[in-house]
Amino acid sequence: MARGVVDFAGPLLMWIGPLESWLPQVGCSPGRARRTVNALGRLSTWMAARGLTVADLNEDVIDEHIRAERERSGAPSPAAVQYLPLAKRFLASRGVLVLRGPASRDLGGVPRLPAGPLAGVVTEFAIWLRAKGYAKGTALSVAGTAARLGAWMNSHKLDIDDLDGVVLERFVAAQSSGPHRHPSSARRIVTVRKFLVATGRLTPTEAPVPVLDAVGQCLQEWRRCMQRERGAGPGWISEQARWAYGFLDEFCGSDGQICWGRVDVRAVNAYVAAAGRGYSLSSRRHLVAAMRSLLAWAFRTGKVPLLMGAGVLAPGRPRAGLPDVPTAGQVAAILAAADRSVPLGRRDYAIAVMISRLGLRAGEVAGLLLDDIDWHHGRITFCGKGGRILTLPLPDDVGTALVEHLRDPRPAGGARFVFLRSRPPLIGLTRQGVSGAIAALARRAGLGTVAAHRLRHRAATAVLAGGGSLIEARELLGHARTDTTMAYARVDLDALRTLTVPWGRIPA
Picture 1 (cartoon, rainbow, N blue to C red):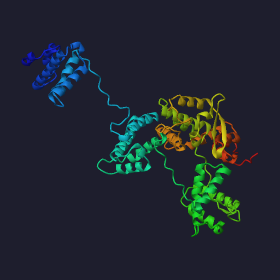
Picture 2 (cartoon, one colour; picture 1 turned 180 degrees about the vertical axis):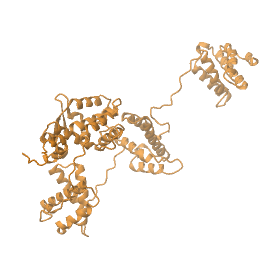
Picture 3 (cartoon, rainbow, N blue to C red; picture 1 turned 90 degrees about the vertical axis):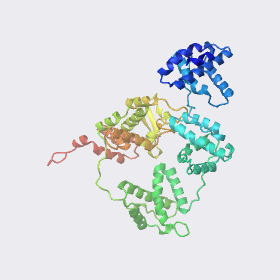
Picture 4 (cartoon, helix red, strand yellow; picture 1 turned 60 degrees about the horizontal axis):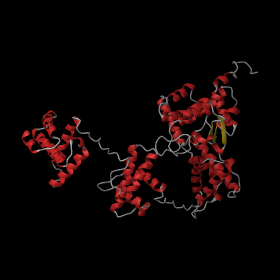
């Protein structure tokens, strides 16, 4: 192999002999070893022609030599490209050359796909996704959909000014078929649309105002009345309107108008019996409440001549049972199931403590804001059922759980809700999210599915068992009437036993 060395010169000649000995040790074939030595010799000769020494050797010098070899040979991959990497590895092992670190392929969440007119938008979109807390893989996938949108627009000669709802629909349709289809684009385009609207690049499409028929107009007026006069919540109003819609639809004539003259108690009871068939007792009670409320409103507005609500028959009442209240041990198991070493566990623990100690509803916990907690005076304010504003003292264990949760990092400029989603979008938890957190803890504790409302029952019975009055329990639960709270008095069996008398003795 030394036969070709005499043709070379320069500062690296002293390393050619050691390279020849090293190459067989790393399993290099004789032919590849010979070409590697020649490549190093040509690099040494090239350095000598430019007055470079070993001290000048670095990867930039080698890259410049490779470019010169490309121009000299006219080949896109000359011998220097193929064999110098092995020589670089040898020189680095001897301390002659310091190699650059591996080039990072991470582009900060920006896809490699050219995005055409949306190139700058995709970069900004990737930053927006990171700020919203999206996981790295999810953010890259969603940004990839935006990049595919830009590439598709570029192929159709569309500019960013042409971007509108129709273009997005055409893009999703194109992604659903063809050899290079991406069905996931239909799902991920929702997040892309939110970003484009938030940054003013897309005008939100206004939903057409529906043209209400007679039934729709009637329900709209009744819903406004329930909200204005009774302070009913949106969930209750929607359920009531669902029951009332089927009833009004039955009395809608061929001209599209409601025939209120045909409405009587017999017809209402027939509808209640038919519509409530197969539903639970609670749902049938809601159906009756909806009919009575609708008929009372119809009487006040002059649609019917008589007040017929009292004639609507209530569903049968089975023997009253006791509220389903978890034991103290079950509540302790649910609290212990929360992994308080991670933020999600601390959040769920605080939720469980609040419901079991303060008796809050799931919706009340979900709507709690940071401004509702008065740390100075040790109290908490929340919006209860029917729009009532309630204030409760903040016990030490509840306050400690809240502090542990709120010390965890929160998204910059995020919502003021106390409890946020653990996955993007990082907005406030919903009522269903709160219930799901309690159910997950109960399953982890081996108790099956436990509804959040059962922990509220536990708070009520704990007040009564501790010597509290029904008035105090009512204030804690936010009940409008004391008779609603009386159901929990029947659960305190120890206190009820003191009211019993031995068999055969007349009560005093």
